[in-house]
Image 1 (tube, rainbow, N blue to C red):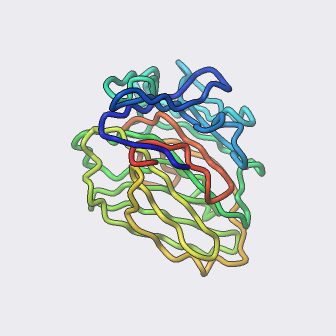
Image 2: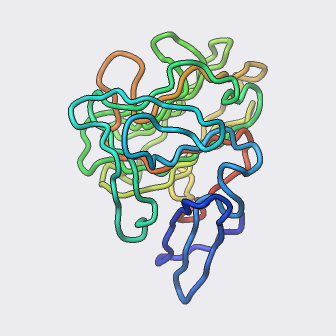
Length: 261
């Protein structure tokens, strides 16, 4: 995308649709989410959550798809503000054990089927988190349905687990060489080039790829959608905060961020 970056750049999003630009000034600048065009209007974008609701259901910016809360104690915790370089990402939604947002019915509009797909999210994993957690998922693992899981494990590793409609499963395991359970906000981007590989970028830097050629010919449907949650048994809920989530059914979309996103 040709995004300029430097250590003092601030990354922000605009609440007003259609106002997206990069403003350079001195050694820093401003980045508004979705550059160079409105994030939810960019080509092939099928879903985008901003986590700006103050309670209850989250709604996506493209099809107004709702994700309802699974409440546990004080979580999900809405209206989470953030300062520093990320100040204009506020608000976000914080998750903890047994609390998440979910869309429990299929949405055909979200299924990448046989196309390439890019998933992007801006998230914080809690400082000192000591439990595995799903950052997000588009499948029902318990029912062995097709989709994609993105998980952070305390080993520490990232897992991208992808299941096709033919029940071919590919799990790419990538070492967390950063140590992301430090309470810092980061941009995560997964690029899936069908019949080739799936690659994870963190703040624009590749952590590695996994071959998914075995999925050639199989579709990847959307069964459900979970934010900060688990569908299978066990406590694998995210301990952290989500600020953005976007799905594009191509391999080229990139909303930007530190290191180019």
